[in-house]
Image (cartoon, rainbow, N blue to C red; front, side, top):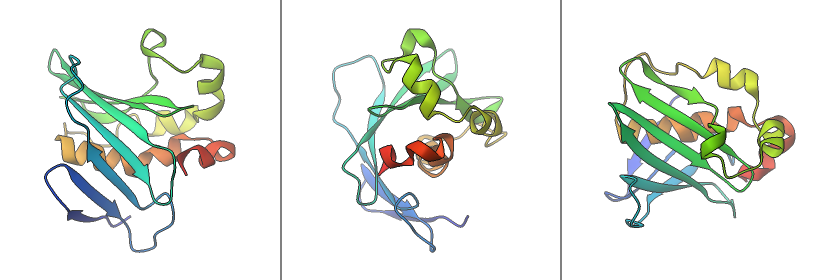
Length: 147
């Protein structure tokens, strides 16, 4: 998939591909500091979507985690010296009940996305990869929660 990156400002950017559909076009916007211990927070919106997905970054012991949360969706992406990839969210971090998460998330896709990059990535690359790969983590019957 060829990605075209356009920077609209230092806090907002959009990415899509030439053969776009609702899940290929998205906008990521930085959220003002919410007074938490997290370093950064972004909103991810796919084209024509009323649903916003929050991405919360935290760094601990040299590992950067991006917790991705929607109304019925939770997953995390991790960037470390071992690379960048998807992981299931820990039950202790979850806000969405496991019965819902287990139906929404495609476990095979999580395994396939365990290593998206063999190198650590910066925030902009991580956000772009999350937005591009996240729809594949959602089971087909639940894709509408991203739209």
